[in-house]
Amino acid sequence: MARLGVNIDHVATLRQARGGADPDPIAAAVLVELAGADGLVVHLREDRRHIQDRDLQLLRDVTRTKLDLEMAADDAMAKIALTVKPDLVTLVPEKRQELTTEGGLDVVGQRDRIQAIVALLHDGGIPVSLFIEPDLNQIKAAHKISADFIELHTGRYANATRSKEADAEFDAITQAAKFAYKLGIGVNAGHGLNYRNVKRLTHIPEIVEYNIGHSIIARAVLVGLDQAVKEMKALVSQS
Image 1 (tube, rainbow, N blue to C red):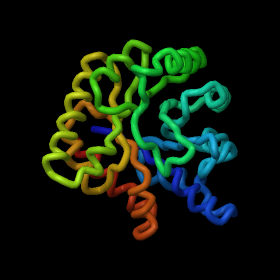
Image 2 (cartoon, rainbow, N blue to C red):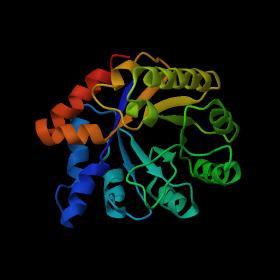
Image 3 (cartoon, helix red, strand yellow):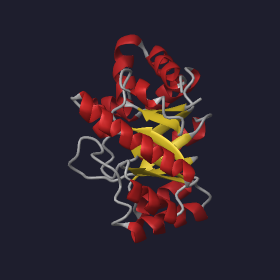
């Protein structure tokens, strides 16, 4: 049965919109875990547009499941991770202007830099996941630098407007997941997944965890966080 990691960044986004204290992502984290999520995901961005350093430290203190810290592959972020000690670090590409992460890491083209960060985190006892496209060459590179997990970027699948395009992206994700599994790499998936498009991916048994944020928080505005998490947990548990 696949696990569900809930990204709570957008709870902090709503808080930062007014510059106050509410809603508090720490309170949301507790509710998410009580609703049955298998882990919490937060992205500490360089510009601190949503999650703050204070949030990350408090989350480390209160998390009872698994804390997955998404961060850029740089020394400054690595130092924070080594201090906070999340259960998993997911290295992601980061651009200041982007609204959300636009694609996967180029592990092939930036192998030396990413390998150095992976080694640094491993030395600190922190397992590492790489957020990459469903591309076999990127998976080979991830394997060569000893990544423990990959998280397949599902954005193109989620945003496909034609069935033929969605089919092609689904096939790419399937083949990537199978290839990574054969190499002994754990396979997660995420980005753009919602209550409709995640169902098809649950037929890929190699995917062990789905990391989903925006659609859950958006639904929570209407039906409450407890129900929104439980509904998504039921969907991903079909695998």
